[in-house]
Image (cartoon, rainbow, N blue to C red; front, side):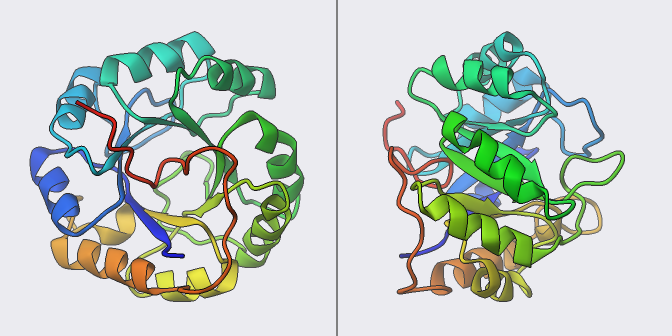
Length: 241
């Protein structure tokens, strides 16, 4: 099964057109932030880019917001297909978002800062449609450009496969290391932001295309988790108008 590729941190029409041309399965718009991100957008800017996204590409809201109503209101305003809960929310908040998602898939970020990430992923897996494993620093919840311990990520993939919960790998990925990362972790999908940018923070077409091509050609024939519901943020929905 082909590994899905998401490119996050889309902040302009040029970025959007570039990553769509590169073949990305999903695009991420960062809005509603509590920690630093160069790619943060206003709700209106994110909504404009969402509306310009072709129907075969999945649109993902990546947000740090920690209140369920605020998260859902922002998702409605932007008009996305998937909500990536990337903030420091508790399980009750995640459950509330998931139960009121109205057909949207919910992806919960887990920061792999040690072996205890496996327990956190197991605990919240029932309250979302997929887990995204990312790196973090003291002031950043994503976009760190740093990898984490892939052996922990691989263990999480193995354990969550038993309940049919897909895992998406992020954190320090780029076109040069994504093949190795896939071979080490066997994720359902991979997610990149800073690893495909120029020095000015704009998306680089060659890097984006290389990342997507490598992801799509890697891991062919290897088993990956089969979700209970439709595949989450990395599959095109074909349902938008």
